[in-house]
Structure formats: C-alpha cells, structure tokens
Length: 253
Image 1 (spheres, rainbow, N blue to C red):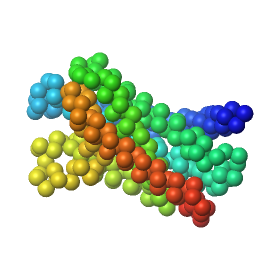
Image 2: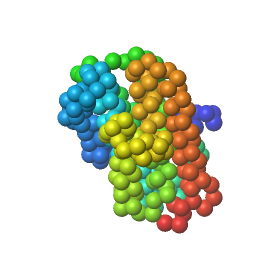
Image 3: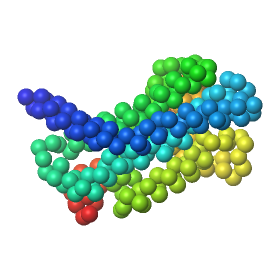
C-alpha cells in the first residue's frame, strides 16, 4: 500500500512539473535547435582543421557540451520557480516525502536533458556521418552527463538569491566552462595556461566521455563518467542541504 501511494504521489509531481516545463517551451526548444545550427555552421572549419571523421566528432560533441551547459537554466528554473511562487514550503508540508519531491522535480528536466543530447548525437550520426565505436558507452556518457547537469543546475537554483543572479551565473558560467573544456576551440589550439584549468570544468569530462565512446576509448569514457557522477552527487548534496534539511533558503525568501 505504501509503495502504491509513493507511485501515485511521484506520478502526480512528475505530471505537474512536466506541465510547467511544456507551458513555457521556448527555452527548451532553443536548447534543442541551437546545437544543430552550431554544428552545421562550424563543421567546415572543424573538418578543415582535423579531417572528416575527427572534425565531425569534435563539432558535434563541442556544440553539445556548450548548449547543454547553457541548458542548466532549464533545471534551475524548475527549482527556482517554487521559491518565487512561495510554494516550496507548502510542498514540503504535503504528504510527499522529500525524496519523492526531488524525484518529481527531477524526472521532467532530466528527460529534457537526455532528449537534447540524443537529438544532437542522432543529428551527427545520420546527417554528418559521425562514427560511433561504442554505442553502449555513448548511452552511458549521455546518462552520466545528464545527471551531472541535473545536479549542477539544481544546486545553482537553490543557491541563487534572485532570478537575475541565476540567469547571469548560467550564461557566464556556461560560456566560461565551455571555453575551459575546449568545447568551442580544441584545447590543443588554446594558450598553454588554459590547458591545466580544463579539468576544473565538468564540460571537459563530458567531452572525454563522449569522445572516448565515439572513438572506442573505453577507459577514457569510464573514467570521465566517474568524475561526472561525483559532480552529480555533489550537486545533489547541496540541494538536499538547502531545501530538505531543516531551515532551507526557501523558508527565508
């Protein structure tokens, strides 16, 4: 009986948050379409610099990392909206358990992140001829990167003090982290002082995971996925500490 009640509550939360996500689809649509335009426009430069196969891989994975980092705003807004509407404490006072609340908020945006990556990768494979050496590892990389984005986006959503602050953090942080990762310009072509900073960007490990799966380097993919899971766990810990443990920030806004 208790399991059935849990399923009912989580299903209701998922449907509610999915409705909120689809009610304002503009940000989601832009994050789905823009990586495709980036790949088409930048592909001739990447192919000329790195050859057909390597160029296709780098332009697809680079664009994917750039715009998936910018898609953190979708995750953050899913959390921040409850704070703006003053409904988070009301949600916490309901019969839903803390874990059920987190699952209900997370599933729709996690699905959106996975859809974004699958769409871009399918675009690269079907239209650009991008090779895929390890499909299973590529699916693993997609899931791990999505979890890392979910954790990062939710953490920023509970830490930010205003919508403007959150938006600025996502925009500036997304571009900086993408640049440090080598998603826009390969690290081999960037100044030497930038290269030691690359591992501090989650996007760097996402590129390692995707490129390893596409080229058949299983060790690189597994190692990078491990780091991404650590990032996801850290973000989840911040969310739990802020919103589910005692006096969270939501209670003070």
